[in-house]
Length: 116
Image 1 (tube, rainbow, N blue to C red):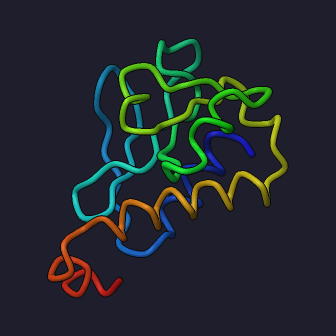
Image 2: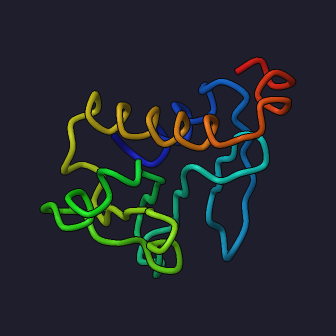
């Protein structure tokens, strides 16, 4: 998937919001909490970063093409310098899961408010 396709996909996830922060990094949030970053080419954070489930972080952060996300690894985020190493269905599944992990961690009242 291209960054533009990733942007379009993340924008369609339930209650996702999009902002631009930190030198042009596109940030997707749910309930005010980040779940995906799309950085300009050659940005220090990697091309695409996303939250992963804590139980999958260790394996995923060392898988080919992945690395711990700069500044966010302690929160179990991974980075992809080239998102095309994954098939579109694989990347969409990771992004959907990132969204779900963050949404599930929101307070129940916030989840209900957002219709999650």
